Image 1: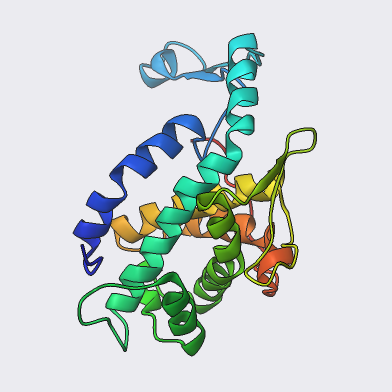
Image 2: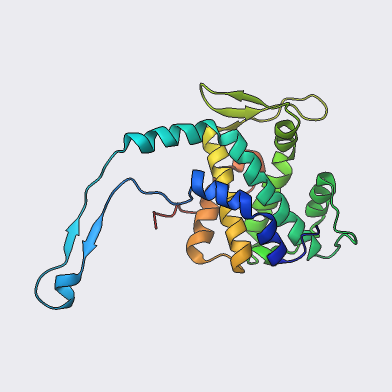
Length: 227
């Protein structure tokens, strides 16, 4: 199916977005903060603020399990990025007539500047970094899909070799997390019609954590707090 509209993109990525949202939500919280406005609103008392930080052993176990699955989550996130690129190319200056794109062809078209960055909201620097991330991780994706990837669990990394047998720059655990979150934010923005200021700032933050792979200038993003 040709990814030529936002609706088709949303339908084609529904499963991946659901899985990633459940296993690695973009915004988390480690506290149970409460703000009670009831008495203040009727003029009978002050605003009640309760802050009670907590640590859940179950949540910790889930976090450890999720970390161990990061390479697989990377695969789901890479599909999101792949279809974002395909949508931008189909809406760009040189779309494919039949809608069929090989990954190498997408990378070349991105490098030529054929994509329509407006699918993400039109920020040239953010789009350039996202496109560079796609190009930089295509071989990691190939290694993962074709079972040539290597995982180190002690200090979680995803690595492998390119088509010429040269070692790839490994994606460490923090970079895998940044990749997943960047793809999530970008996918949601495509469906919503563009990035809001908060999401754009968070996306810049995650892309900055991947500069060793993209080689792009610092975007100066800031991590968003929990919702």
